[in-house]
Picture 1 (cartoon, rainbow, N blue to C red):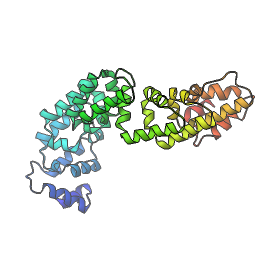
Picture 2 (cartoon, rainbow, N blue to C red):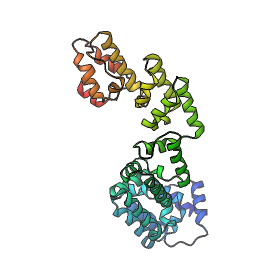
Picture 3 (cartoon, rainbow, N blue to C red):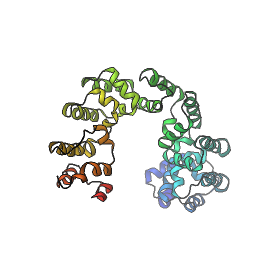
Picture 4 (cartoon, one colour):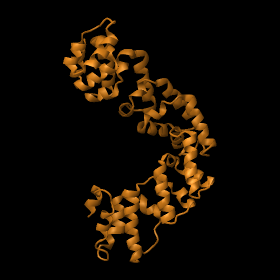
Length: 343
C-alpha cells in the first residue's frame, strides 16, 4: 500500500507509511484504483485526492458504488462540480458520516436558514466545518433568534463568516450577555451581532488593554462605549493601528474623542492608502484658500476614490495643475483602476 501511494499519488515515503499503517488492519470494500479513478472522473486532481486520503485513509477502503457515489451525488445536486467538491467535502465525512442520518440532515438544516442551494454552497466553500458540527450550528442559530436577531441578519453573517456559528452554545450565550451588559449594546440593535463578533475575538484581558489605550489619549469610558455601540468591530483593530490613528487624528489634526467616537470608522481606514494622501490634498487646497466650505473629515474620507478625485482634485486642475501628482505621489502604491480611469 505504501509503495502504491508513492507511485500513484506522489506521497512521500513517510506519509505513505503513516497512511497505510492506519488502515492495514482493516478489510477493504473496494480497490484503490477504482477509488482514485472515481475522484478523477469527478474533477478532483491528484493533489486533492492525496490530501483527502492523507486526512482520511479509510477512503481507500470504501465501496465506490455503495458509499462514494451516493455521497458525492448529494453535493453535486447542490450545484458543486469539479475541484469545488474537494474544497467543500470534509474528507472524514466521506467515510465516517452516514449519508441519511448526518450529511443530508446537515445540508437540510443549512438550507432552512440559507434558503437557496447557491447560498449553501457559498457557506460550505467558506467553511466545510459546517457539516461537522450541525448540532452547534442549530443551537447557536436558535439562541440568536431567541435574542431577537433576524433570520436575514443571521443569514448575511453566515455567508460572510460561517465559522462564527460553530462556537459552543454556552460560550456564545456568555458572550451575548457581555455584549448587552459590558458594551451596552441592546439585543435589538443592528450592532448587536457585530458586538458578539468583537467580543468573541477578544479575551477580557485584551479588551481591557484596548480600553486603556483609548483612555491614555483622553477618552472617557463613555466615549469608548459610544464608539463600541456605533461600531463594535473597531475594538478588534490592532493596538498599533489604534495608536497610529489616534496620533494622527488627535495630536496632529486636533480632533476630539467625542467626534472620533461617533465616526469610529475613520480608525479602520488605511492611514497610508487613504487618510494621509487625502489629507495632503485638503491641506494644499486650504493653504491656497480654494475650498469654498468646510468639509467634515468623515465625509471626505469615506468617499470612494473616484468621488474624491471628482470633488477635490479634478475641479482644481487649472489653479493647481500639480494637485493630481501630489495626490498620487503621496500614496504608497499605484492608484487603483478607477482613479486612473478618471484621469
